Length: 173
Image (cartoon, rainbow, N blue to C red; front, side, top):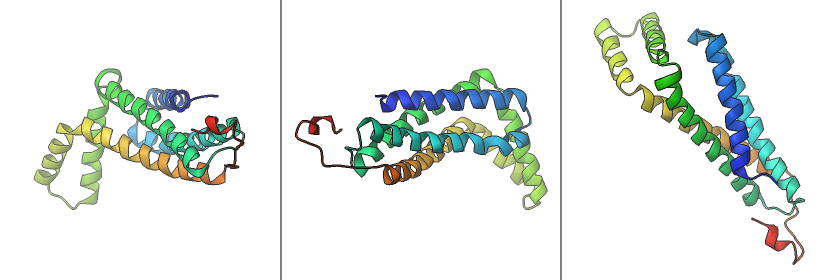
């Protein structure tokens, strides 16, 4: 039986590899955004798989809450790995990513034509100061939200038989 830690590590490594591949082979941030859904789909499907796997390992002797907790623990591990990877990516692996993101943001603001040059400069300056914090917040919120939804779905669809025999009750977690 795999623990939520192991499942989170597996999902984390898959998303890290996917991210590195995207950043290496598709250097344009606008193009990368077209493929960012793939990572979110993997996370979503992976959390549901974690819930299903847990219920199967427990022979269905689980409750909705047990399965949800297992899925959300997996999400917590995955989110932690993703935050660490985000920090390493932005500071060590691809430090120029921040400048590319700021250029893209400037272009988008100019295209919208709602702000003047001074306002755009101020927005870029503030975003640049807190770029890593914004990136971490984005990962945290999006991964936890997706993980919670996937855990709810996973807990809802798996086969449950929460009436264990007296000898099996020790196995419920």
